[in-house]
Length: 261
Image (tube, rainbow, N blue to C red; front, side):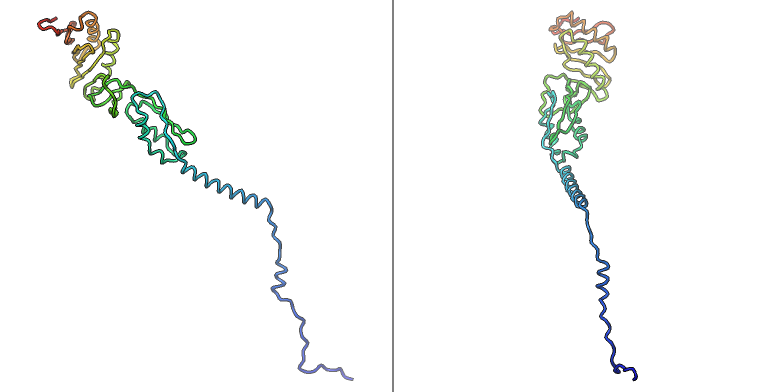
């Protein structure tokens, strides 16, 4: 018998194949495990960032709340100093430039020196050293003990000060002559009320006892000692003027008419 042949025109159905994408998915599937420390580090980074932002904000906006002026002050008005520094209240306590404040206050009349420091949480403290006014310079400015000429502060009472007159170029000589005269007259009880140095450096003085004294422009020290002797030997109320522009003597104008010496 011959082998039975399959019916013509019929084929066997192939076995179903698994889709390719499913096989790839199973091969590529994996599990990711994030360690616990990663979350703590991330949280720390966030906290540090927030703290940094808050710190920057505080640095820029923390206000200066008050200005405190301290020192043994007589001529310098603390309120005027405070008014001149109102601008610092718009500045940050942390970023405020204290050197700028120091320079501004040091330039004020009668301020010999100033130290500036910040005091937590919002104060600016100024320790001011005052310069001592000793005379009026040309009736429009103050001359201090350090020889500095400064503007006359508003409202300052200058009635008790002596008067110095002269050109700016003669200012140093005026201060020197005044100091030397005050020192020499200390034991006589008489003081210098005014001193004038003219363009040719001639020195004239008015004393607290009313005497008008002419020194000329030479031998000031010698003539000053001669004046001290005269103050100790003459009736001060009888003398109007003393002219020391002589070799060894003096010309005296008396208050009583007709009397000379």
